[in-house]
Image 1 (tube, rainbow over the protein chains, first blue to last red):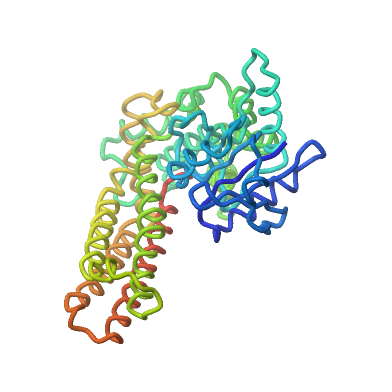
Image 2 (cartoon, each protein chain N blue to C red; image 1 turned 90 degrees about the vertical axis):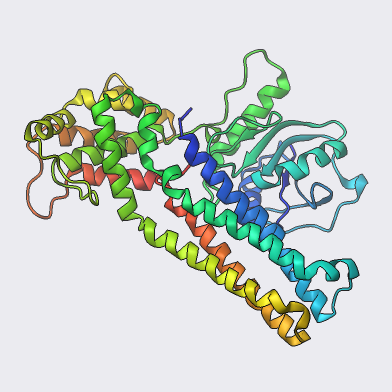
Length: 263
Length: 174
């Protein structure tokens, strides 16, 4: 299985990271990683340390690629040119570093993981290879999208925002110039609401904490972290809360944990 | 799939385009080529004849785009936008209202948004100052031209650094 990395900025440190990831994960069924620059015209091969070979002439270039990776900002200037050069095309294309989750371009799929620091692992490599293999077999069932192409922040962001709401109503969060309302009844109603499990489940659009845990795991949060996240929410909603000056509130710990998981 | 508010996605796309495409891949090479031409290391008569107009023109557009980006930063990046998309749009209207205020105020304070915005505006002012020095470019000696262009390059690189760090003010990574 061969792959090409299309990136015009040859000083980009991500080249080494991507080469290290792809070549370091390679098994015997995989072969070359090509680096394509100059708006799709200059070719060389990369080793696992990101070292570039001498430029490849036309004869040394592949006529078909299993996989093309392209840097988001180089897409428009490079892909048309690459199409002309690769007579038989490629099986799957992925875009690095495309912010957000816009629609795929020309069948290219966005990789929604950080490239600086580099967040792709052996598991992602295996999923991409599995995805390409399934496509190559032409089976009717669509290949599952590699997990690195799926967003994982959905529940974590919502949890962090809900936690801020709880901490604010309980006087545990400073929110700039926003202060508690002078309407005591309204304030208490809001405070009570943040203590109800239903408020959390509605805000997360899940039916139970077990479902939340399952969805977090599906979103690529490690099972131990998912379990801990749920435990911290439950601890906050089931008094007595930990007491003492030096005991941080569970939702403060939760926010720290979420910040780490979103990196 | 997650619903990342479209305002956040669009703002980040503009920032990346400005930082990577316009500044790093377009303006810095233009400036570097201008320096090499003045040094006499590169000969390009057509480029040289338009250099005095081209550099300020491209740079002016770049500065205006950066200012527009920072002016729209709070409105585009506010974490309150997450209350308008799934799953948090499932909350009752009152919760969404007060939570919006709380999380925006917390974000503004924790990320020091005002200071960061001022830093970028200062960097733009620095570029504009160097740009004004090019007003009398055609009357300058070779050494003066080189000094002005090199100072402009330093200011532009500082602006590029500021644009790069702006990525960190997003309330959550996307």
